[in-house]
Image 1 (tube, rainbow, N blue to C red):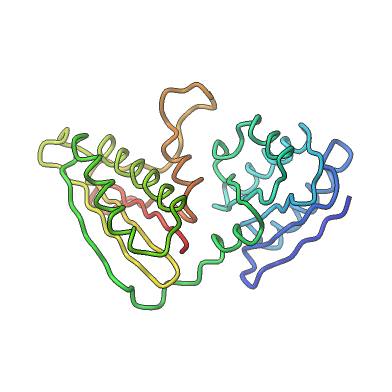
Image 2: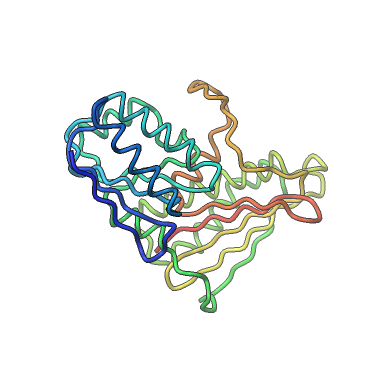
Length: 256
């Protein structure tokens, strides 16, 4: 097995390309390489699996270990380029999306495109604002209005669906957790901002605050608690901020 680590211009982002099987004999070497990269400041790791023909439970243990290493640092682990067989192992594990930092990409280039978002320094192309009553009946309308606006951008059908699901989950949380009056007089505010390379969607509520932690308690059959998992898996960046006057602002970013 061979491990090649490539650091991006942003030292917080790196690609680790694995060439060969990941099993009990090779996983410790990958772990050492990952720990070394993180210690050098790389907290957003693209694990390129394109040339990994075999992965077993040792690989899954390595992914769990990396998730626990990156989570306190606010980092991300993107599993990129897995072939059909390795992707099947990952699917059976249920780790993608369940881990706080873990997501997947078709290849390393796609993963890097999502991570290497340049700072927002240019003026936005446009901004659209919406406000909805914080009641379940507003959910469908809210999703539709936001997606009608985003549809004008250069997003694929799959990316537009990702936005629809992520926005729907953010609106659901705002209605569920952000309605101090039980919906009576409460509103959810949405800002959609388009830039040349991304779209940013901010959902604000007036509730007691929601910290963005997924709460399934590790139970794959839990009836709720997966909304944050979906948001993080489907969008390129997700940030939660508690507002000074009460409530939460959730920002969803999708790279164009």
